[in-house]
Image 1: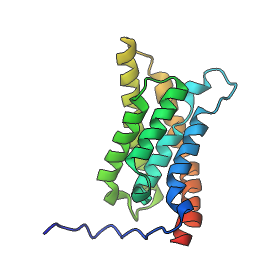
Image 2 (image 1 turned 90 degrees about the horizontal axis):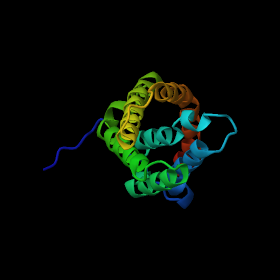
Image 3 (image 1 turned 120 degrees about the vertical axis):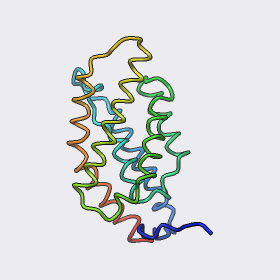
Image 4 (image 1 turned 120 degrees about the horizontal axis):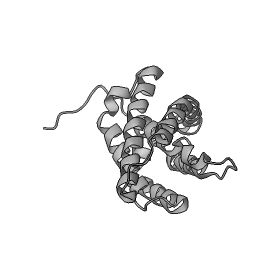
Length: 177
């Protein structure tokens, strides 16, 4: 007999197609927002990791609606369109999802400061991993200041992104469940 985790409430079933596709759609929109061309010198390297924000949010609140295959496709498209090493962003998104999924029970039904602190730790790990990948690919130590600044921007932008994702979840998924 398998032990059942009782501290996490069961997720309501989503019967409409829009509600089921919404987490993947919003993650894709966040990926496009991350890649959006802005005519500011150096902005591409300092864009907040909006895709990571969506992955974190949906993995905590609706992991059943954010499949790994969809994340793989979004990460691959993002890598190809940004010119990043193919598979690096994909791998990071899948590792982030697996890590959050493992500790999901700690974040469900918690206050926002706790969830934000968890995102801060995840974002620091992801940015560090991406920095290490780039250092290995370039065979040189890259200046970490841009990575730290991107981390700060990502953590600072998370409350607004989380609010928007949470509102859309309540309107499109929970209302029609």
